Amino acid sequence: MLIKQSEATAARRTVILGPFANTADDSAYTSSLSGADLKISKAGAAFANSAGTATHLEAGYFSYVLTAAECDTLGTLVIRCAKTGVYPDGYTVQIVAFDPNAVAGLGLTNLDAAVSTRLATTDYLLANGWTRVPRT
Image 1 (cartoon, one colour):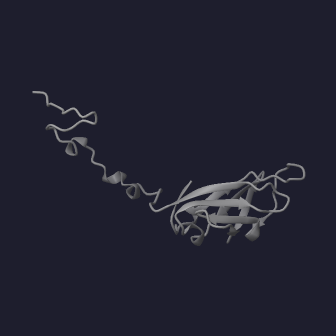
Image 2 (cartoon, rainbow, N blue to C red; image 1 turned 90 degrees about the horizontal axis):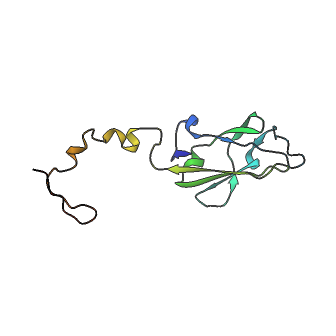
Image 3 (spheres, rainbow, N blue to C red; image 1 turned 180 degrees about the vertical axis):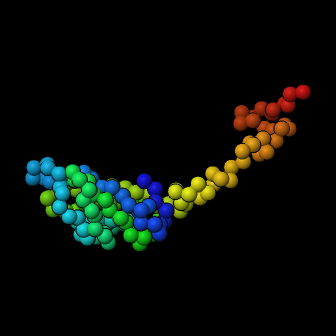
């Protein structure tokens, strides 16, 4: 999953975690997860407590809304479950400088429909070192 650095829209910072399972009997973990139960590591830094609360969806799956502060560092963000009695699964998200939800942010709207305007019809050097000779 790609998230824009310091993303302002909560829906775009929402990640689905799980399924989490109890270590005692491998059943789905369906209680709450918050604060110290989820640890966040930004760009390889030490893990710290999460700033929000995960909402249980069903069957051990949780929805977690990262805060804008948790998304302020470019690179890999790791979310790890640290709840006692629950398997310590981890999830990764990439924090990027561009907006993966905006076509213009990726530059796609800047593409020219006619590639011929970017490629000269006169001679040019091919990748294999040969010179293209235009057809007459």
